[in-house]
Length: 96
Image 1 (cartoon, rainbow, N blue to C red):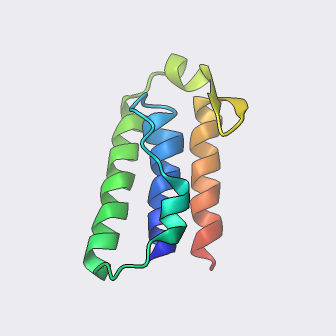
Image 2: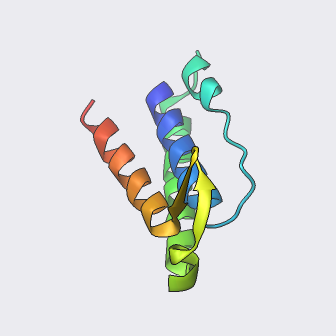
């Protein structure tokens, strides 16, 4: 469950917030501190909804928005890199 919360938090931070400009509402420590019980369906729905929201952000983003540099996670990166980092992070955790 914590991993699903963490993946949703990462996608929301880098793509929905970082690329899309939504407010940064991430509480990273809470992703790991949650002890539930949270129903499996709720966790999966949260992750699927976040991925759907991120997909919509990326589909709507212009080349200019994706090329713009923003400060995320302590570094200046483009929207392209923010999306790539989020995908790579997601992929890395799916192997766990």
